[in-house]
Length: 239
Image (cartoon, rainbow, N blue to C red; front, side):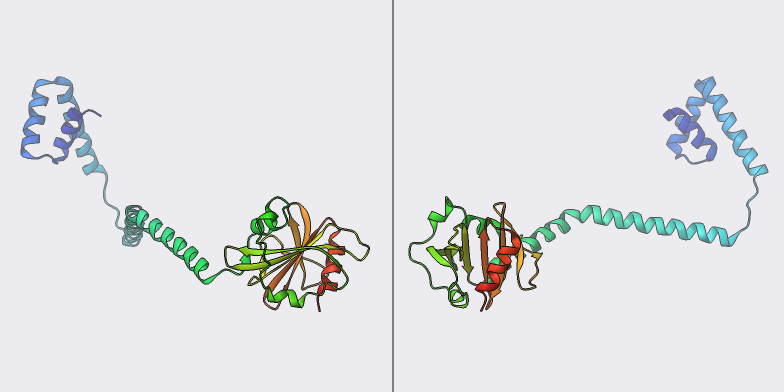
């Protein structure tokens, strides 16, 4: 609808300012089509006033008013949320960031599977410290039935000591490795249940692995063996 027609209809409804009314009447006087539109609008308004009587229904009207108020509240809420969404998002990111700092400051007792997998990687294992740190948990692991072929140690995250043993089983077969990690009680990704409630299982570098806790520290046994055999080895290492 053009502005001229809108002015003509508004004139018929009596909704114009003095300046707009003068403009509308000038348009009507100069344009026969707009004059006819104005007469039609007046006739329509007169017919509505004559034939459309108001229906008194206070209950229905109150429901409509209540519904309109509800919609207005929703609109106000959406407007508020939209206006301050960046503040809420920023606060959420700040909380996440702060939580990460607190977690690192206090010290998480979960070790990522990436860190553990690196311990059993022949390439990265050479980065371990030459001097094996004193890991108290090693005293609680029984390796009397296994032959130690190597021992290296170092630190995860710079302050979590570990010691790793290369092992042969009772039959002299190689391919086993045991890591004892101080100050950890969970290995990410090694959470599957086994026949022993104290032993959890999973895969590291695609190889079967089992883990269990020792005096608040964690042991991880890794090797190309069936999972039930690794669980059996873990039970033999427990006192």
